[in-house]
Image (cartoon, rainbow, N blue to C red; front, side, top):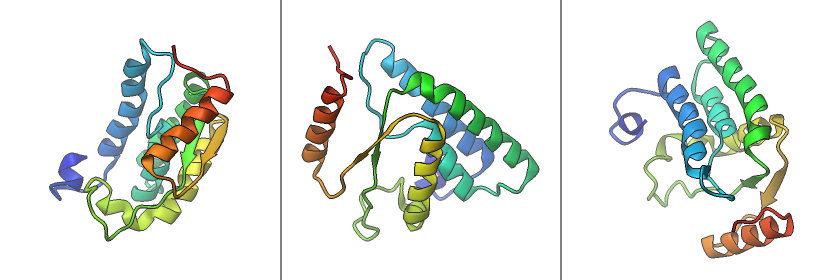
Length: 154
């Protein structure tokens, strides 16, 4: 993905998207192994939703892989996630600073709808984070809600 986004070599393809999907399964599993609370910025459902936007989902092999990823999201995520914190903030396309998002900034509105739907399809409860907060305010808001819900770290 770094080659595609940062070095402009290649394009979004099934292998790259499947690699991202797999990372969203394995990295949180390893990170959560010795923790009681883990907050991440993506889930497998996020990656699936974006893959549906950047790939040709009418191509039979791609459609079959995306369907398998969808089935895995629906089966795995209710086991792995207690809650999804959903943030609808938009990134200013003129501000720069996040080169990993540059190629998909024009998809923000479409991606928001697709990601929310993919997350909702998993059946994991969703708590929407208010927009327009600073990072510090967002962290405080999330910590308060997570504590109120009894999802706490030791």
